[in-house]
Image (cartoon, rainbow, N blue to C red; front, side):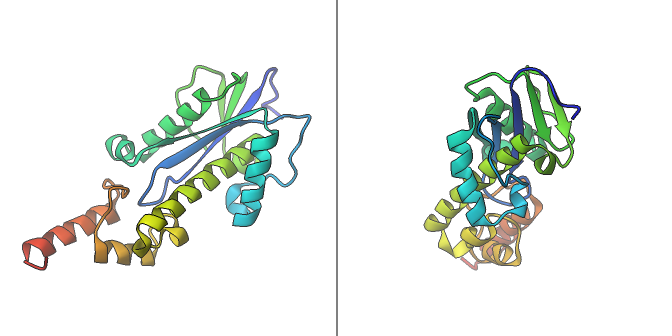
Length: 203
């Protein structure tokens, strides 16, 4: 493989670039070659139960791992791409051990002070990136399920913040929460229509 380099190898991936609500979460993982983990794959290809089990196994067996996020406010200030890069950088900086090289899923690299390479479809090709994708997705899904406890009318436990028909209907009916990304068009439209309704004396 072209990414064989001396020193520790960290894989990095994110979850939550597309949703209309919640933070973007990134993870960085350095696996322990002496304790391989069976069944690592792109988190999107795994069932929720399988992801949960692998999450625990990764936390137990990896040399070190780090999960970080960029907030909704940062997403709205910076844009989703820059916020994703920020979350990835925070995840790498949070590693207890310094990697010799970082492999990042996708085609863009966050600014890092270590040798790094972008790997397209890395979450399917590189076990450490697969592990990072699982940690990021499970962490984010748990955050959205907590959000569901506070605001059950939005259905966050089902769509995890993505712009499903159910979510868009809830936005229209109930307006946007503090956790909604105001820079995303469907949220901006929902805010504009509730503002218009308010001016029309509907509230």
